[in-house]
Image (cartoon, rainbow, N blue to C red; front, side):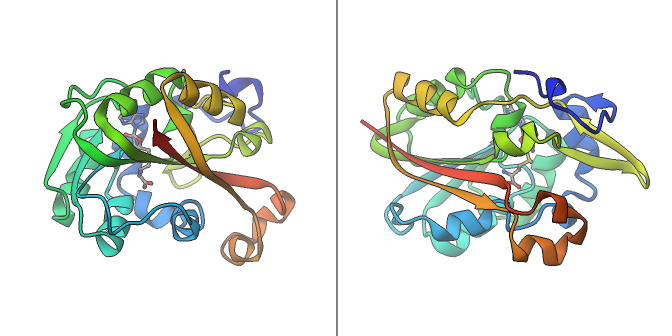
Length: 230
Ligand SMILES: C[S@@+](CC[C@H](N)C(=O)[O-])C[C@H]1O[C@@H](n2cnc3c(N)ncnc32)[C@H](O)[C@@H]1O
């Protein structure tokens, strides 16, 4: 479902490459670790010491890659569709290789990775089945797929992904609402089995950094899922 159905902000909408190609200037100062890194810290079914090769899908500026390199000795590759985001990731010097590609059709060789991870990009995909199918193709049998997503309930509360193009000039990056059941259906059809799921709420930690979000207190803003390839 297009987010426009739920949008209460009605900012101008830009595409993914235009949006992230511009937001890259301030992206790392804007995205809070409560959104995704806090959920990664909480995972119970992933032994980060085990994988030899990890793929960071929609790696952006390498925030997730930086976290992984602190928690895992694995070799790390990354994929993203926005060259400007990849340039920042490249400068971190933590990836073996970085590819400019769509995460639903990477062109990378099959069964290459022990673990794949995708954080905060699935809301930009019109449909989920191509993502789960592509990650299943890339992952070795028994391997894992960790997905951290922007919560559909938060999108449905009216706030799509957005940033300030200029001070006081917010724009939305085109987003789609995927229900949690859409994830389960797409993942199961691609041969994934769910090991773990969690949700992150707007709590005190959030409100200390974003006091204006009191109106969203208690709502889920992000979620994590750990899938295993059967
Ligand atoms: C919110 S950022 C997340 C970046 C990083 N994973 C993080 O957590 O900081 C979303 C990223 O997804 C990328 N992206 C969105 N749709 C994509 C697609 N279909 N294929 C590849 N990358 C995509 C964007 O270019 C952007 O870098």
